[in-house]
Length: 325
Image 1 (tube, one colour):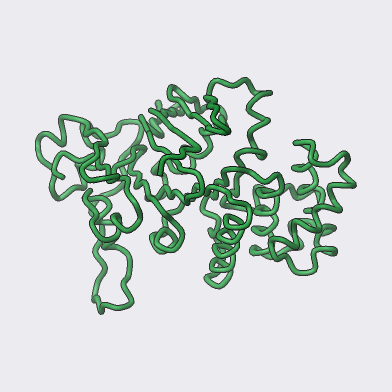
Image 2: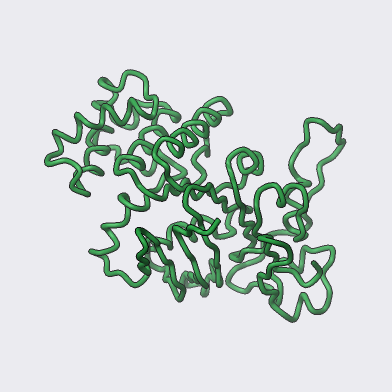
């Protein structure tokens, strides 16, 4: 793959709180290629969502993007999204890069009908001349995301819909402007298993139909196996391993990746007790010196506690940040 659509370099985000500076993500770098599904995976609090929000400057106070570059490539031209003023970045949010947030209950406005909210996304990027025209188009968009009875649902308010329906609305808002990149931030959170499968299949279909690139954020390794082409594993604000999905599952190198996979139940093997990763996620106000995983790592040595490992290519397209690889 050579056609990069997104290039992230040394992205660093800190949150300045009364308790201290939370180093949410540090020197995160990765590339996303056109047409692929790229997954960011890791435990809750590892920095996945912060990374995704930082791409289009959606970091609110007390957070701050300390450094980094995010290049968006289109038609042979590149623009650093982090250098754009607020008016300019708005032209990219929703139109070029759209989000499906993990909790539709909080991302949808309870005071407006779902038809109005889909219409608003169209109107903001001049796809329609009025909200009224947008609501008519919203019917077709809701039909596209397999919303039952879309003519009626456009008049409904979020509290009148089920969790799966609300997630379909957020997907509809996301695809309404035919974005080149669709960022799905744990899109199946709080949904039952049957609805989860429907939503994931819907995202696959939207990707195929619109030719979008998907940046998938999840902590579910089963979702990663089903959806992703390449995977970046995050731990405590850093990427520790990056490779294609087959290499991650068949030949994981970083001890944290191995621990994540061993904690996933295998229906083909009878296991009395699942393995766990000892210890807890470290404080990002005072993270461990050296490798941030070293207090929990079975392979940790003196160099792990003294020196931060760099993310280096150990095989073709397989990157690992570990002194003991």
